[in-house]
Length: 303
Picture: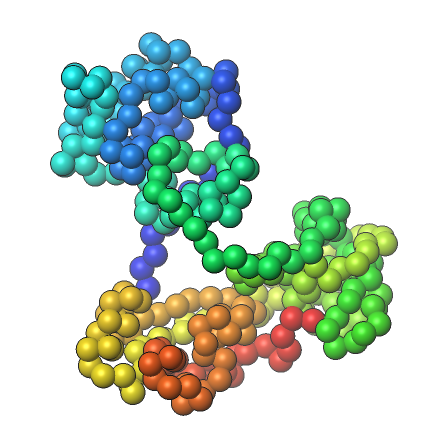
């Protein structure tokens, strides 16, 4: 079974500006990234992005060559450094995962500075999604409450009740299902942990001192493995395509997620219902350990 993911460090979401001072390690990451995904760079790329001097850019390139001998070649006719045939990325931040994330950010919000190392890049588009209403002041209150171990008095609009209710909630984490942002919080009225949509918090009317509750949320801390496989109703050639798509080994792969997120994962994979409900060509994948996973589903979805 395969469950390999490429990891990389998170980088600050700051745009470069003239005169900014960055550490050399960050500049070496930039060189590595541009060589892998741009195929070339020169000193002006470094001086323009980081606001450093040309001599400093030369020192950085020399240091990169020392650490990664054979990764770049100097083209004297065009006065640029080009990626060599033997190139091997030095930094995890040059991963394909990071590059595709940078492209996605450009597609979603091209005008916002994210501090990515992207230079020239291919045209990129993303399937549009309706934007959920979010109040910045509410998000700030939730983040502060998590940091300070506080409970929030909120007015919340649930889907099950047309009348907003007053609730005392102690949030300990944030989660995204790819479409909506939730806070994972202890509901003092219900005496249990639940998911609450940030877009449905109408007002934060007060804060109370509480304690750290994250370690008590077993559904958040419990990790669940979903064993995915091609639909057995597919022809052999089609099953091989699905195995290729999902990087399966021996006909299956494992997806790991938090127990509290199981409901959303199954929804997005089209696995919330029994696989026989749809034709094999539309369903494409099945959940091999459905019985085990369904026992771990939370009692209720998002409130």
